[in-house]
Amino acid sequence: MKFSTREDIDAPREAVFAHLTDFEAWERGALRRGAEVQRIDTLSRPGPGMSWKSAFQWRGKRRQMVVRLDRYDLPSAVSFSARASNIEAQFEVELLEMAARRTRVIVRLEIRPLTLTARLFLQTMKLARGRSEARFRKRVAQVAAEIAARHGDRLLGHRPEPLRPHPLRGSAG
Image (cartoon, rainbow, N blue to C red; front, side):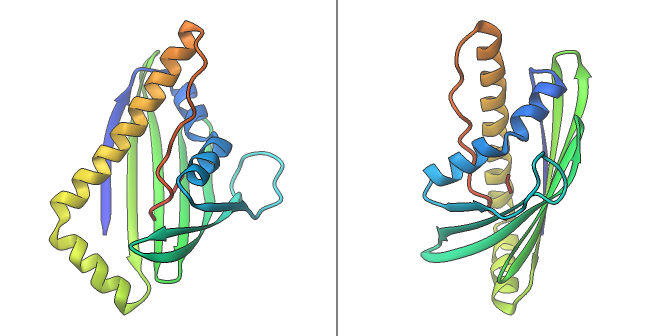
């Protein structure tokens, strides 16, 4: 199953990239939401190969997932792959500079089932595709608004609140 959306953010591309790749902030956000997150790579700088192990409650069950940063192209793109016991996911974010202080963020998510149970679940999601796509677009819009607000606060000299990302549903990131 594939999802795709785009949002325009009133911030320079480099600033948007910096917010999106603030991996420690994403980890803290997942921890605040009750997930367990553990960095499992040995890299000293951000780049392909960074990996996290995550455990969280979803639909009444404890789920575990491994997330890996596959692409880190400063300041234009990042992509992640994620694998749980029953699904694989690919999550890509592309940044296009629209103007000096405006960035278009294109987000793509592809989820592939690994088991019959996951295949049935994704089939159910396809039946409610409109609602699933709307939730995906809404969440991307929320993150975009948070980034724009944080960037605006930095320009005004305010200390920004940390990003509160959703635990990786299938990334993020």
